[in-house]
Length: 409
View 1: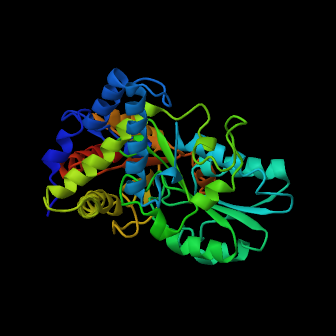
View 2: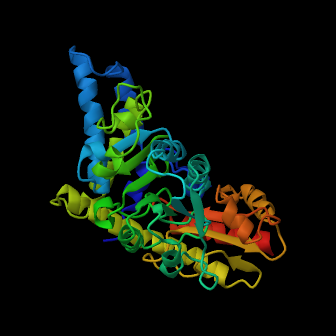
């Protein structure tokens, strides 16, 4: 069944007909039901948890329910494998700090030049503190992607962690995380995946992928400015506490949530799961929650593939444009985050010219600065990035294509 776009767009009050929003990889619009849940928590249960009086008990139940819903949403085995935090960057810093007794002198950490800096810098810093060695998994020269053949030579019995992005926020490439995790585990190491650019587009299933740690930002998945770090229970247990001294190693996930997580934003985030399930049930009203989510994501990925194909077809037809990433729109290979550069115009010139057309896109390195530097695109002001999600329409992409034709002429 085609995606019910009228219903979808009605759920996002921030969408306006006169403005086309195509900067979704920087942060999506927020669901009305998420904001309503945040407001309801603040107005009715905004008290400290852990007391015996009824409002505190109710607040704790709401917070626990949100953790359970997020565990269901991503395929975690148990709710306490969910760590809440303010952003993916902060959660990765917490994770790297908590690994200080896991990584020692002479150990090895593998990072990529494809990642957002949040999943690179913290590991380099940890290596410097602990006397470990950092090895870079470089994109393949022929394909531009991270190939398994490039990872295997970097792994050894001293490898402690491989940090990799699920989807490049520049190239839009989907990496085979389950295969990567299998290779990493064969060498006795842990894997940490940045799922920020993947989570708004495809179903999450950390159990099937067999990852040790997975992080993503909820404000890029139609929710509040909040984030989640998933960790296998045994992988979380081995981490050092970063909370107060009375939080011991077995206190999961509290030992990794210093100052407590944000209760109202956690409660609001559960609305994301409700939305995805309702979207699926519009196709099959009898679907159980798991089936409803699967149906919704099938519709989302199909619609997004259509959007990406419309834009990529336009870009492929131009001799003066270079697509940074796969030129095809196949949903198995990429998400609808599309980057390109122009032969003569700087990326900043194209984006600022687009403002006059009422279309929001962006230019720059998008915190994947090492990738932009390796592609020698700094002088271009980075790439032009058009990042679509399922609430965007073909009419909006056609409007973008028409504006491009004028600007690039």
